[in-house]
Image (tube, rainbow, N blue to C red):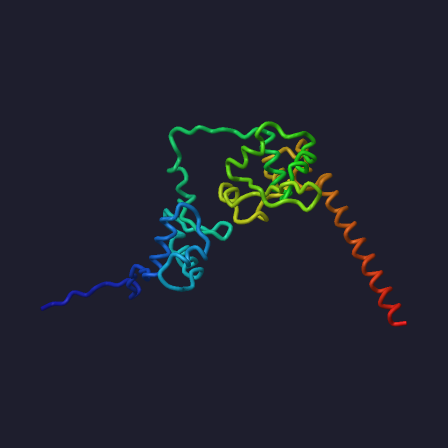
Length: 234
C-alpha cells in the first residue's frame, strides 16, 4: 500500500479560532441589545463573573477584519457595519432634512461650551432663540439637560449626549476639531464664521475673568488666614 504525502505549506496548519461559552454569551448579549452597552450592564447579563473588558478587546480584534465590527464609543459597546461597506448600505430613497442655521449654531455652541445655559447660548449668538430651535436638537437626542447652574434662578444647563458622539463617529469630545482645523480642511469659511461659537470670543474671555476673580478672593482668604495665625503666635 502506497501512502500519499500531504503537502503542508511551511509545515503549518491553520485552525479556525473558537470562542468559549462565556465569550459567546458576551457576543450574543451585545448583538441582541437595542442600544450600546457598558461593561457593567454586560456583566449583569452573563452567567458568571469574568474579565469582560479583556474579552471585549479580544472580540473587537476578531471582528476587526469582518463585515461587522465591534466598536466602543463613550465606553459603550455595540456591533456596527464595517465603514468599508458603507456604499452597500445606502438606501435608494432618502429624505434629508437640513438643520436650520440657528440650530447648527446652537448645537455648535453647546458642543464647544458645555455645560451652557439658554441665556449664554443667546449671548454668544447675539440673538434670541427661534421657535423650537433647542427642542429640535433634543428630539434628535443630540442635546439634553445636564443639571442646573448654581446662580440665581438656577437655569438649566445643556450638554451633548452619547448619541451625538455616535452619530458623528466620535470617541470623545476632545476629538472635535478646532475652528482653525475646520477652516484648514475647507469645511467652513473661517473669515466669515463667528469664532465665538468655538469658544474663542466674548463668552470665553468672560469665563477667564470669572476665574481670575475667584483666584483673587482665594488669595485674600490666604492672607487673612496667615495674619490670624501670626497674631495667635504673638
